[in-house]
Image (tube, rainbow, N blue to C red; front, side, top):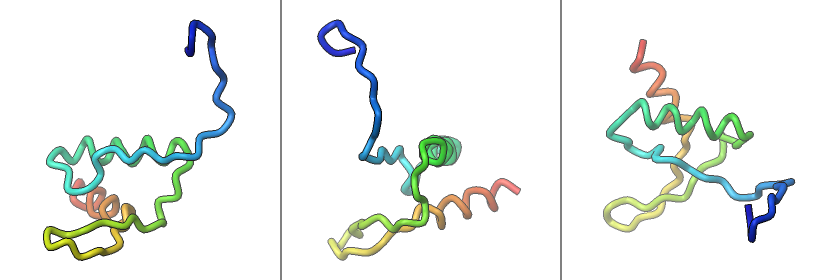
Length: 73
């Protein structure tokens, strides 16, 4: 609702990533992936991240998701 009027959203171009990297609570991390997938996120895309030394690397959410699923079995 904006200025007392309902607004219809036709297209969303941004991606919200919810606590997926090294989450202390694995359930939160897995639930974040479910939300992203529900809204059609392409989980095969790498995300640019930086390590503690400032070196850039690509982080692939699907790798973390696969580890989360296998650790639950």
